Amino acid sequence: MHLPNKYLHDRIILLLLTINSFFTVLGSVLILLRLVSSSGVIWSSYRSNLGISPYTPGKTLDVLGFILFLLVIFGMNTFLSLKVYQHHRNYAVAVLGLGTLLTFMTIIISNALLVLR
Image 1 (cartoon, one colour):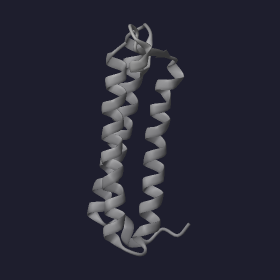
Image 2 (image 1 turned 90 degrees about the vertical axis):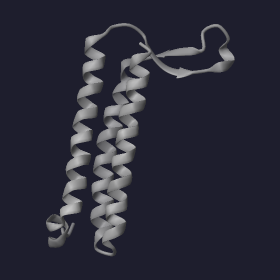
Image 3 (image 1 turned 45 degrees about the horizontal axis):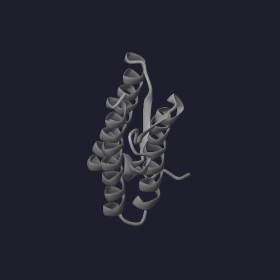
Image 4 (image 1 turned 180 degrees about the vertical axis):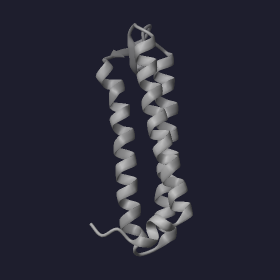
């Protein structure tokens, strides 16, 4: 894979890559700390048609899937922005910006599920 020289010298691209990597590591650490610090049932989904108990229990692997999702988001956004940068810089910035938003939303959603524990 060809790595353009301008890609690593672009300050906005490097800023967004740094932010994405920080949020990926932060999200992974927060999820692992929540899993280790408390014990009990992990609520994985809400089903309103179940009546009295609308929350369905899940496994630890279900929550660890969020860490895998964070890593996939980081890898794919970096790869896509690298490929798109050769054609148009603004598209690469948009891809990385949307990746930051998706990473941040993943942290919020995983935290909301682990608080219900």
